[in-house]
Image (cartoon, rainbow over all chains, first blue to last red; front, side, top):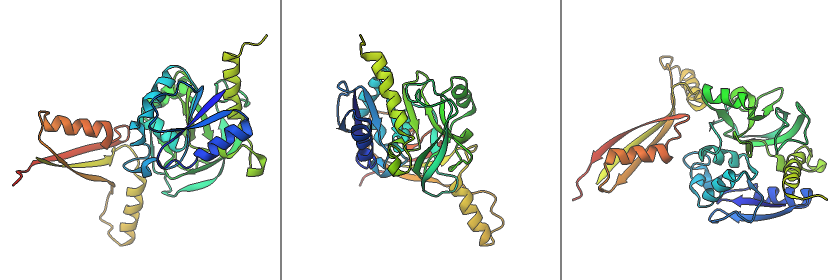
Length: 228
Length: 84
């Protein structure tokens, strides 16, 4: 299976993402610059964290008009797994591939520490290897992760089980309904503020993020590899 | 040529954590009269005259990029300036 890590000017978690896929997951991975025209060669697309375009105007607001976003839109329509982490999530929101928007953390502080998350839906291509309701530890690192959407959108997210991760015990940023990660209606685009790529080895404090990537691989194998 | 001022603020029903913090600071400076503070962005655009209707053009820019209408409202002032 081949992963793409999209690199925007100002991405800074791209190397972590690459490391997680190559060294911990053991799958193929390539960096793809934001000017790329096509993502046809890839099976899954990863949008890493960072500060694309310096977060000018709003987080993700400028990156979402990058050339590569047309290919990402197409990959989303083709049903390929697309994961946006932190700034990657913000870009997916700005691009309209996921509903809602981000506000500044209610504390106004940039928060960088491990948090407890609850897996709210394990029947997805991103979470099938977790238990339903499993509580995992994944680090966050953001100043704008205070998720917001209108009531109608929230009801849809709940009804379609699109809320995938919620903050457990305490909410670090004030997000609506303790939302930490949501997916699109068709189930192939996931955005989340916590960084699973920073939790892929016990040596780093947690390996709880690895199962997310393994779930994607499992989904892809079942779909594409003919077993005899 | 047009000089366009664009103001972007968080929507009324969206909590503004920066505005709340600044209101608290003003209160601590004993400006007790302050009821509410909303923090936003102010942008100045210089736009060349074209065949497009200027107001339509500005609105389009606001909707597409300058504001995120999920959480933000925008308003603008358009001033026509004569280039000497």
